[in-house]
Image 1 (tube, rainbow, N blue to C red):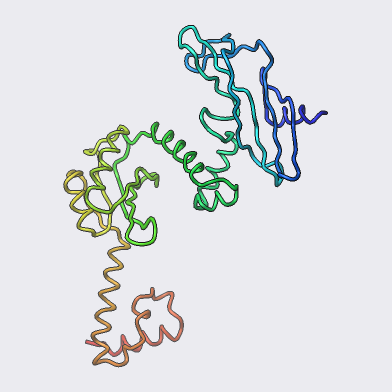
Image 2 (image 1 turned 45 degrees about the horizontal axis):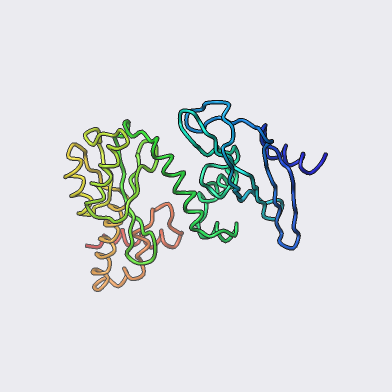
Length: 295
């Protein structure tokens, strides 16, 4: 089997597309696969699907493909434009890449898979591409996915902020509490984030009046935003934030009391830990303090 036939099968190409040449440059650590179509080939119009359109002209394109072992691989082809009687001149969509992308579909799938587990900058270092090009891929598929999102069944929402980078740069995340699906993300952590979420919710077939429950921390901004934009919803405070405040209060009382009760020194974690997680000596200390019934 010739190398062109091998790559033809490996790439899954069907008529009229076929591999015409393969060039491997060891010095550049690069494989180039040239794809073409026979003269007189007919294509379907990419807009209306009309069959039997002949090539109007062609333009050469190149796409980064999955590595050939440890070497970079590229596909190149003349991409035809067809003259459709109904739609005019349109560029044909090749089966191995989406229109306008410099990567094959398989390479983009790899990027999307890796993006679930690591920062885009790390992916860029691994695949040796500028991260700006990878962000374009991510933005395309995220936008495409969200266009078809349906939030009509959303009734319970959780919101929390997280730091997007060093410093006070925050992003607020909105999650469907039933499905654990991220619904929306936006910059900031003020009341306006709730307004932007409401707009996005309604743009995806959701209804703000259907939101029965909103879970958030005790941020006055979030509380204000919920009351203004989701007045029908019950407000629930995130238990982790409530426990954090409770633990801080317990620790503050301990600090105050240890001034007159020296036996309370170095007992902070004894009061904050779950009893079943205490070490033997910590459990003994706690029992001793409880017997004393400190007031």
